[in-house]
Image: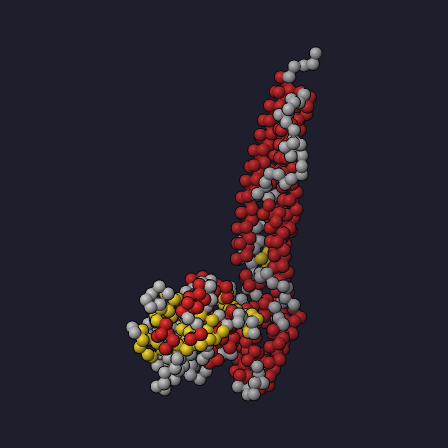
Length: 97
Length: 465
């Protein structure tokens, strides 16, 4: 086990911030994935037994998506925290003499 | 016309497209989320000074879970395909409105192949043409059109019947009724069975109710001894709750068939569930077997009804109108399978069990099996029925006036098929328990218990399924 250099830690920190940014965007993508479906899945579009069954299915999917979006947001937040920690570790390393 | 039968066709098409796009988007998103999580994990390990390689973090693995995306990636495509099929069917229905066909609500939005407009129009032209004729000319014409009807799909059949007036349905019945009277078997019973199956399996609830009311030819024929009571539709059958106590023989001599069902249910409590299906349109499909091959028979729930109970097999009569109805419907399907209620009279358990399961069954002399053998069969899940001997005071054997013999505290009905439900080898002496298909509504006990000597004295046949 060897401690990475300050330069490597900073590179990791930068990459984690990029990953966090992209994961937060994916959280939004999850939350909006079914927007095109849900905005049309209403009584103006269709009515009856099958539309009701499909509506329930879409609602279940939307609930699952919301949970996945929440997970993505939590991951993004933890990666940002981890990046900040790596920055601190890099700063704490003695400069080369 | 954008909206049809409650469906805005353009919007439903847009909805279908959105559903069709969802799986690939969900899959790509899931992969990105997983890959990012894997990379972040790799960095956390490497930054701690450990080797991601040694921990296996640089291998390509599914890694992480995206539960919210998986059902969409795997399921939305199927839903999109369903919606598209229904749209195609709906559009084909709409195209026929101008030709006088009518479709309503959910019945138009079925997951069915699109309607073949040309085939449907030709069938209607041919059918209404022969219905306008009279006498034998109408009957012979109808027999020709039946084949054409057989070639229609469910949506086409429903549209065809919906386009007929009540008067035309009545003329159809008159023509079929005349066909029944044509001698020498020139009109095979199969023609009626096939028409009944075609209509009862394909029609929506509304048209199914119309043909039940207007086409008695779809019902299994009654014989001349059993024509007294009008048909009445029974309450929905609770197939999952079926028990042998629901089996009460009515005014027809099919003890052998009813005892066989009870035997199968004794061996497998799920037997009825495995062989009887309730359809959405109020009909039931029961699977029987001919020469070992399955034959599905679909019937409605209308049976001869005497005002308080089904005339033939019925649930516990003390339940009245709301008693278990599955057995009356099962028996009706068997009557259709055999060619009429009269054709179910008289038989043995082995015939019944073969018709019920398709498996070979044996009919043995009751002396061929000891109580040990019977107990072993029951233990192995082998269904069994037992036939009582004839007593000779001359009553007709197929009515409830069958002779009865007192045996200890029990009564044995002459020339009657019972279900073997248990053997008590620990009793002194050992006993067998039999169930009379007359059930709790008969004039004798539903269950009887006999010693081995009594059994062999009064029963001469054992059917082993």
